[in-house]
Image (cartoon, rainbow, N blue to C red; front, side):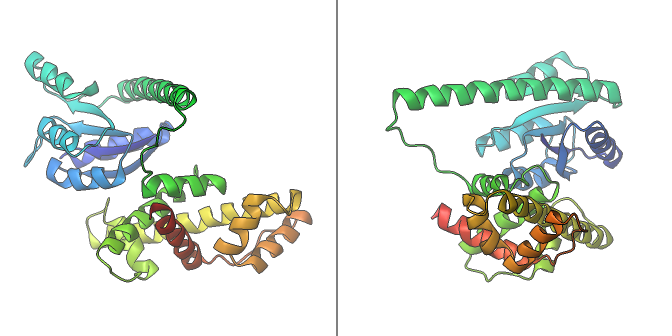
Amino acid sequence: MRYFIVDDDRASRAMLAQIIEESQLGTVIGEASNGEEAIPQVLMLQPDFVLIDLLMPKLDGLSTIERLRENHYDGKFIMISQVINKEMVAQAYEKGIEFFIHKPINKVEVEMVLRKTEEQYRLKTSISVIRESLSNIESPAIQHSKKSPRDHVLSILNDMGIVGEVGSEDITKIIELLMMDKQRNTPLPPLKELYERVAKLTKNTPDEIIKESKSIEQRIRRTILAAMINLANLGLVDYTNSEFEYYAPRYFEFTEIRKLMSQIKNNEERKVKINIKKFIQVLFADIVNKVN
């Protein structure tokens, strides 16, 4: 599951993120200290769940939820609050929150609430898939809604077997930024600039941005290597495999894929050159073609 945290208390944000990651509940893909700061990020990142504080400066939790719903965000909300007021609780549930997490934050309560909401989310998703399948059987001529760039990116990363890798989210964010640039007809920026722009979604100070940029590069590098290993294994099993034939020569230096295949076959250490720029450029071009 992908989480976004909105809370004006930095310590609370850090504690929630730590609980989520240490308990393997999912990934925190962003955070904000108030509603105004959160809205554009949530609309762009489209997290599965937003953990949001009830009382915040500039824009409180309920108003933030209302604005996000008006902008067609259909993810789930979990309210964080130390206020126990029946009227406010009722109002929050009317806005569509799933559960409350009470302050001070308790690790056991957070785990219990998030596991329960995840279970409900997966159940609802499964039911939606079944309904869609039945609808397709009954009315095959019905046109599906247009897929978003994120959907296309995740589909391609899934083909390569890396959609579950940590760096896959960084890659997806980069493509979403490039798609926004395309609408403004701006040229493809250097990788370093893209890393910094993604880092700024969750970090504020220059030192934090620089540190996160380096982490993003390393996560993407490891993810691309995982894709290369997966494709090399496919090629060893079946050189005519459709995914191997399409992705290996387009997204990577094919000589490096061949080298990796030899290393895997001979049980040698995996040492290959990783061309991040080529991977991003080809992926972006594919997404542009699919969206258009």
